[in-house]
Length: 427
Image (cartoon, rainbow, N blue to C red; front, top):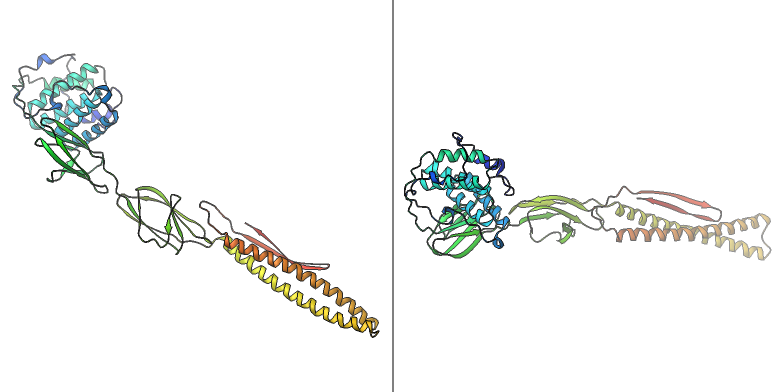
């Protein structure tokens, strides 16, 4: 019973059910072998919708393929644990929910295994009936030969005795969670999925499994019915702790969760996630994590200083040096201006010789060059300083961005009437 429900055949999964029992001698297939059943079956403790001769499907508007598949999976678990009566209840309910013909074959196999284990002739009678119904509905199915062989073997003993039915009230619990357990009215834990007989009236069921929230329901069970409960257990969240630099922002799948240090671990749905930690001036940190249900995980984020932050420091330092150089040039320009004014006064009084006049002209030229250099160096220094500050302030990490190493090159500029410094930054 490991294959899908769709299609006319049970496939390899259904064949695996029959692998542990010899098929017996082949016999000719008959569309109706009910005349071989003999007299009525012997007294049996079994009754209810799963033990009627003909299983009546629900009205078409009430059928659900998904519900039938869930019941089939529960039957698979019960059959694997050799809880054949539980498997029969699930399979019968699955057939009523959505009448796939392969379920008749599976029911015949479940009844046959129960008969081989306990010798209960009611299981033998219904194994015969289900195999007959399967062969009648799908005479050319892949498993038809095996079904015929088992049918022939079961019909070898025709004395089925008289049958006396009793009214039985049951609760049928379905769940897709492995290793789940159930408790009825606070009783001892039982494996789930499963079927349990109860008295008619109000009952409370608890289904639990590691890593899931408990499923608790109360309901009234009418007499003589098999009350179906589908226990859909919800995952418990995982606890995620994140460590990193103080003030860094923690993001989970791109959504901000708070700044470090966090006051408590994050409660996160189990499964794959992306944890990111960002802080201005640092490269963003990202890590893919897979969180287990009800588990504890820790992410330690180590942040590296960004290239832009290093570049901002360089620009601010270079701008500061340029401003200091501008001040020095301005000071030298003032000194040249003072000496030139002294010679100018002497020239106005007719006290300057030709060599002194030439020195005067040189001082004026040097003053002008130094003044120009001070202005341009000051402007360049201010621009570098502002650029560095801007790079520092707007150094915001980008998730997923890749940055190479920044390269900065610089050189002094000296020309006729000018002096200064140039810098080129490549990211």
